[in-house]
Amino acid sequence: MKGVIFDIRRFCIHDGPGIRTTVFLKGCPLQCRWCHNPESQKHSVEVIIKKNVLNSHEIVVNEKIGRFMDAHEVIKEVVKDRVFFDQSDGGVTFSGGEPLAQADFLKSLLFLAKEHGIHTTVDTCGYAKV
Image (cartoon, rainbow, N blue to C red; front, side, top):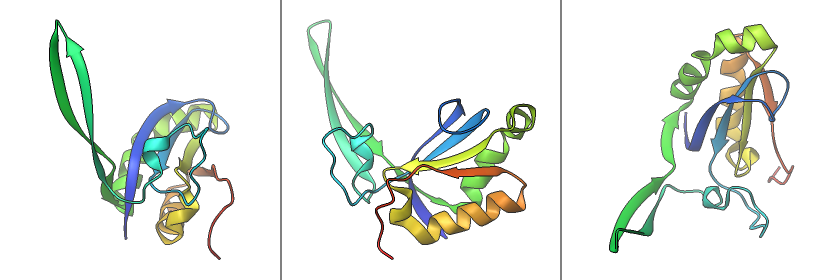
């Protein structure tokens, strides 16, 4: 099963117990003004245009936000950090956006992580269709 991933960040210490890898799933049904990751709100892969000035020259860069990944690909990335999890009682945190917005994909990720013996945490606002 594939889902849309916004980012995978390693060596996180504020997203659950121990040292963690945080997987940010893209998409959120809410549009909170105070969102920490507003670029993760849309449910699709996006391209944004960033404009910067360097030495009086305007530089325009197209940046891709999000990517499709198979659940096995995601867990393969997470497993690379197992040594940190084992030493710190850490694991993987699934965040977002809103991870429950991709409930079936999240379920696959949770089952695969469990198969690998990796502790899981879900960072959610709890807003999802049931």
